[in-house]
Length: 431
Image 1 (tube, rainbow, N blue to C red):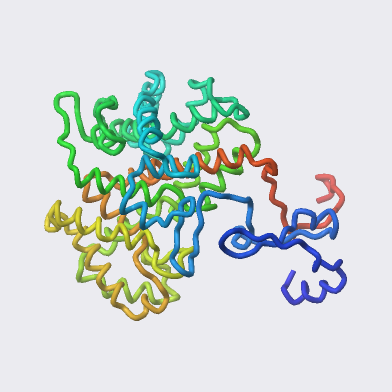
Image 2 (cartoon, rainbow, N blue to C red; image 1 turned 120 degrees about the horizontal axis):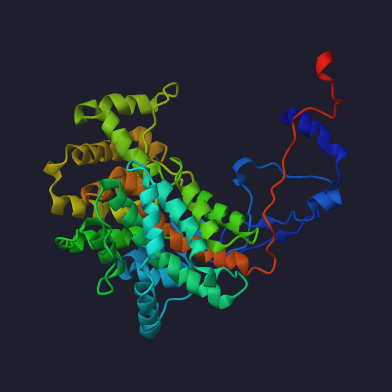
């Protein structure tokens, strides 16, 4: 059906001008179309739901035109400067910044939930040595419902509380086990004497024979990345968690669904795609050629890590992480990695090229996060797993909000059917 044909048909439809307009505290107003089908026999058509508010939420606000990102009303810039990931996690879960006692209790709870059931650790041995870590993480998170029956009752506030703490605490342990399996090293148990990010680096890079000397700059960088990745409103993976959870499924399966959605190269896999792009470019002397290819509409090549679907201005997270990226590279030594040198050269060209400036194709958070992870010695296959560790907090916050929403319903999008009209079956001999 063409747009012109739709316009010709519109006069034959019922009047829709009396639909209710709802106002939020920030952002565009929304048209309430919940009764549109029952009263007017009409659906709306919105591929990708780019103009559809699927829920009411108090968690995160984005203004893509102005480059604004707020967690529970707090600018991400302020949180990145003055807070830490565990405090931001508390904020996203409970809606307010904690006092010292609240933060200490929350932090202690997270620390004491980091261990995995030994049966879960043995599950890793069922994967091939070269299995992608995201496949392992998704499967292990889904298996948690087979181990932690005390948090399966989604109608219990206490069960939801324990689940939230448990999944946030155990994701780093699961991620580290996936990494260790991929490199053939023994699993490292978490240590209750270490902070969240210290523990992650310990489980990644220590071995039973000796502990890894934890780099404070690496800890600072990871903490900042997790803050910036903690939530991003109704993105693909968060919407997937909400949709899976809306059926009443256990929360572990909902988070596993979100992890699978995050794996896509257009979503959480973008930072992995950045490194693959850099490998393809190969050398600083090839930058000009690839920049020209990126400008060519007929060339399928695209610069990964530049621009953003939501932010039509500079990604506010990229502004924050850029300084940390350079801090990490200066500490690690840029000359040690030609790939990182290439990344910085590409960044410089793009920031000063009129074509990219006019189209607001600035480096985004995925560009810098991939460079940081590479500098810290984290393999490319683990990049999306690292994203999942930070984003789990946002997923849990949205799942909790969805479960307790009195207006919540099972998600069930409709469609514009363009297939065949009803027709009669033809016997095989007559076809």
